[in-house]
Image 1 (tube, rainbow, N blue to C red):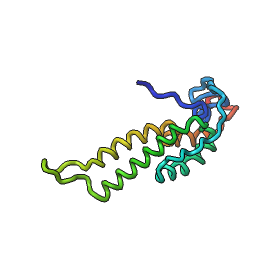
Image 2: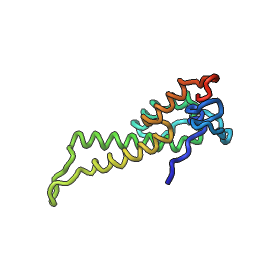
Image 3: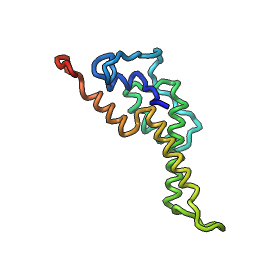
Image 4: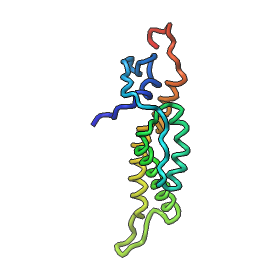
Length: 151
């Protein structure tokens, strides 16, 4: 399976020139969604709501969000909450448990591992991983030089 397509806004931020992506290809802006941040669902857990409040301002400044992204952002935030809870459980109770069969991995280890994988996948969709953050930073800071034929 290939890489998932990035939103037009991310492609343009990393692009070589206005309207172009990092390879110099024209970027199709896609449908004209209103770029307004979604409202947080009332049912988010406290930790998920804290993560929502932490990431929403930055994503909004980049015009990456629309109201229709609410479900995906909520899933990212709840995944973060699961990851944090499982990680704190392992820190508190240890990596293993004693059972009749002997010493077994703590169930929270598997939960943290699975949530971490899911978290990375969701984060990449929003440009929240270190690699996509660096790519966004390079694109936002480096305006192309119109006199540079290679820029």
